[in-house]
Image (tube, rainbow, N blue to C red; front, side, top):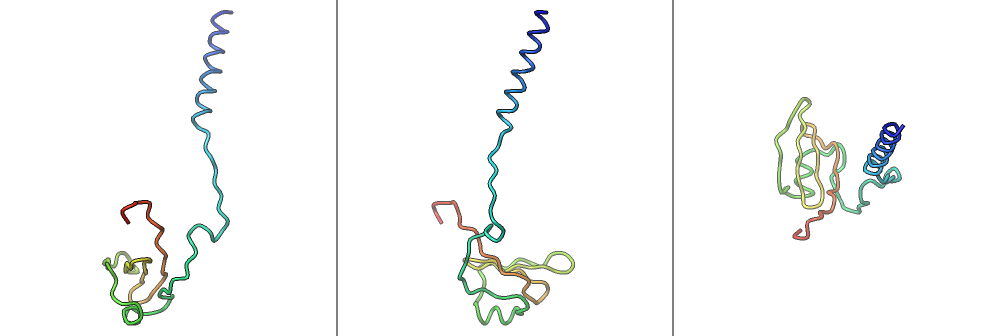
Length: 102
């Protein structure tokens, strides 16, 4: 009986220990609030690259097209513009940095 009681106590303690480390906080965000809201003027879907250059200036960085269809991106200070070929797919606001140097 003593071995059975010891085994039961060890099992119970192990289960308690594992359960305390596996608990996590669940955070839910309402749909549409996953990113910060922005009033930035950004390129819109179906603009071409020449229009984006004319209206928004040169990007800080341009990545080469990847995949099929070819998707490229132009990085601006506050947002990134994604292109399929010559056409804007989406403009996405950058998340604020947690780096205090920015």
